[in-house]
Length: 281
Image (cartoon, rainbow, N blue to C red; front, side, top):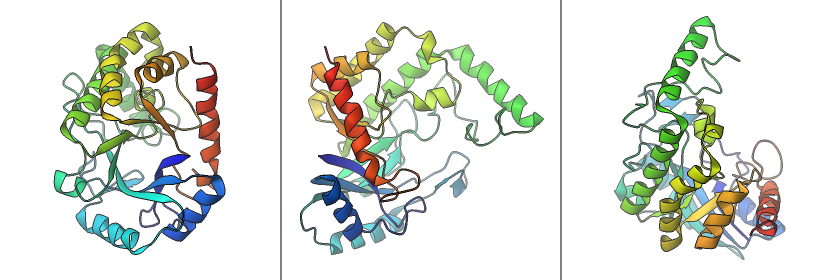
């Protein structure tokens, strides 16, 4: 088994126990024989500050410290890769790490942690809607801001936003060869749903049609489509799997055995993939 998305203790989101010896022991216990240990790398935050919600500016200094510790460890049984998790920024394919630091690692895991910037819907809402200024959590002013955002989302439509997301992934892969995996990809629309896009308004056939160029590119370049225990749309999986896309599983491990995102839940992601394979047609 493989898991290319395991976090390290140097990130604030990574538990102190996430050291190389502990990670390898847990991998051996779980039957994972190949893994990537990741460092968050974000050269800028959406709000222009050093911190935004639970993410932080991370750059060359932090990456070099991680690589120093990573390379000082000699694995006993597991084949390890060093990597970074960074963000897709826009539909042009810009990502949140410069090329010179991409070249220091084996793997760039590409995530979407906030709404990407697009021509029709520029990213100027700097709040994370699950946490700040949304109806469940916010003030009256926050509700108004969220409702205003929803009006803008609805004005451009979910289909456009899905097209922009796929275009961003496609362009990033074409531009940056260190991208080896799309992190916790699932259906690839989690960020759109969080930001109010009505994905269900887009017929499944159209969703798949939008994805097809990206699927083809991923298959041709050996880019992993990463799954968590949440799985993905069976119809989309069928098309991507038939095209030759490789799927990898992860618990997005920030801890070893308990708490949020423990590595031990890797097996649940494997079970989700097995279910998709069983229903593949």
